[in-house]
Length: 498
Image (tube, rainbow, N blue to C red; front, side):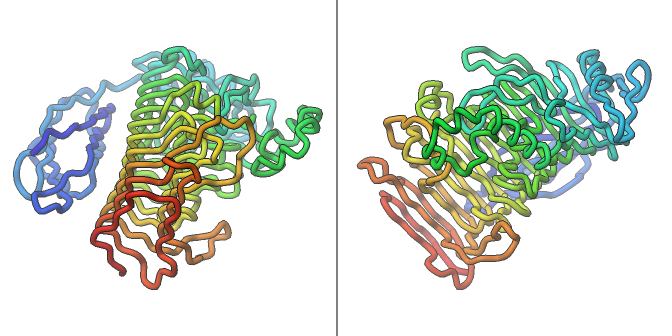
C-alpha cells in the first residue's frame, strides 16, 4: 500500500485523525478497523476517526487497519495536558450570562488573560456581546448550553478593520470573533487557536445586516449617485453598502486554527471567513443562517490547506464558497486558494459548494468526497464572470450525492474594473457520484434541474476542458440531463441511471 498521510489532532479529552480515501485492489472503497490500545472500537468507511472521553496527558495506541488486510497506520498519541479554566462567570471576570447584560468586557478580559496552558471557559448561559479579539496560543471553550450571542447593534462591531469581502480588500465592521490582522504582504499574525465545545456562537443575523446596510447607504449616498447605472452591474441595490457587514468569525493572516463541535449561526454575512491563512480546520459543526442574505457557511479566501469535515449546513447562501479575489486586484495579489479538503458534510438547506465567483487569484487542488448535497440548490458549482481572469483547476469530486454539477459563467456581482483576461476551468474529475437532477429552490420546494451544465467562455482556449465523469449515476427520469457548451475533452465512462 502506498504511504498515506494521516493528520492527527489530540486534545485533552479526544483524538481526531483524518486521511484521504483509499481503495482496494479491485477499486472499492476501503473499510477500516479502529483499535484503541489493542481493543477494536469501530469499523468504518469514513476517512476520519474521533475518539472521545479520553484522559488528559496520557499516551494511547491507535491503529487503523484495512478490513481487506494489510497495515494502514499505527501510532502512539498523547493527549494534551488538562488546561486551567478561566471561567468567565467567576472573579475577576463576573460575566452575567443572563442574555441581558453586556458581557463583552468580561469575556475580552478573560481572552486577554488566557495563556497557552489555559482556556477561556463559558458555562451554560447566554452571553450577550459585541466584537471580541482572540490571540495566538489560546483556547475558547463553550460548554453545552452556552450561547455566545452577538448583538444586532452595529456600534458593538466597531472599530472597522482591514478585511476583504467579495474579492476586494476594504474596511469592514469587526466580526463577532476576530483572529489576526489582514496584511497581504505580511506573515501570520495569529496561530495555534482552538475554538470548541458543544455550545453556540451566534450573531445578529439579518437584523444586524439591515441596520448596517441602511447606515452605509446614507454614508455612501454621493458615491452611489456618481455610479449611476453602473450599480446595475451589482447583484442588487444592497450589494455595495452591504460589503462592510461583519462575518461571524473572521480569520486573517492566521494559521493552525481549529473550530470544532459548535453550532455557528447568523453572521450578518458569511459565517467563517479565512483570508490569507493556512491550516484552518473546521469539524463536527452545524452552520445555521437561513434567511440571511449572503449567509455563506465556510469561505476559504486566498487560503491554503484548509479542511472541513463532519459538518451540517442550513445556510442562506453557499454552504461552502472557495474564493481568491476579484478582477485586477485579485490577479495582482495572486494568492490562490489551494489544498482545500471537504468531506463527510451534509447540506440540508442552502446553495451547496461553490468555487468562485471571486476566483481571480486562482483556485486549485480541491478535493470533495463523501458529501451529501442532494438538498441544496446548486450542488457543486464552479463559477466566474468574464471579467475575473484567473482559473479553477485540479478539482476532484468523489462518492457524493448532488442535485447537479455546474461549471459556468454568471452575470451577477459583475461590477468593478475588467481584469483584461478571461478565466478558465480545467482538469476536473467526478467519480462514483450520484447526480439526482432534482434541487430545492429558495422556498424549500423541489424542482427538476439540468444534472450537468458545463459552459466555457467565448474566447479561444477558455473552454471548459479536461473534465472526466466516471461511475456516475443520474436520477430517474432526469430531463435534459447533460448540457455542454464551449467545452473540450469532456469524457463520460460507465454512466447509468437509477
